[in-house]
Image (cartoon, rainbow, N blue to C red; front, side, top):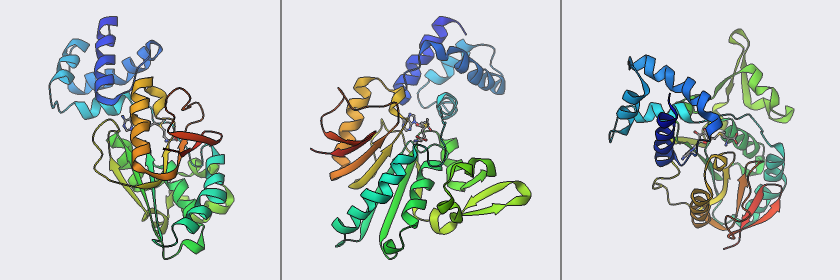
Length: 266
Ligand SMILES: C[S@@+](CC[C@H](N)C(=O)[O-])C[C@H]1O[C@@H](n2cnc3c(N)ncnc32)[C@H](O)[C@@H]1O
């Protein structure tokens, strides 16, 4: 992969996904795309670039799936889930008492650990029984959305789940796996969605989790995205972002209310 090849791949990745690949990712991208070249029996990166440059190329999905970084875990950044349990859900149970409806979006949900963690917290509220609570979980990478919708994980991935929530898993000792209970799973809808494209849903949402996604976006892409999040959130809706992300110098439509936790103000 020449530097010129890598620069073209960076441009295509940016146009398709908003992801800005930095130069130190070259080896990683080389490794991932080499597998695609072998699979497609292509002689070199020039041929691969030609393929992904075609409009509506069937390779686009696999290219996107190959360049995303999907690192995630159950109850990652646990203080978000504590805040959800102690502050956000109790407040929504008061403010939404009339409609008995709560809408949550996990945007960039990867393999599903994030929306399942949210769903476990929601399920722990017996007082929400009879309420219409739904979680929309989306990601651009179709492979991770497929994996997420299965709700089956290696048992070691469940080790980070606090004891109180382990009851929402079925242990399959023979295969060393865990399966998320159907009653937790059924409140989540998994869908592939590119955050840069038009969103099919109207909202409004009470809560958005968009954590460790915009870290790969430039400031302008982040500004547009957070503006759209503000539009689709209810007044005073909650936004959770990743541990190394910030809205400082990006948007004034949210105010900080805790570490990487925001509230919509306009
Ligand atoms: C590092 S994972 C974060 C997963 C989870 N939110 C967490 O914090 O554990 C980032 C996810 O963002 C997704 N992503 C990147 N660009 C995206 C885009 N333009 N639209 C939707 N999802 C995107 C990737 O596919 C990846 O699964």
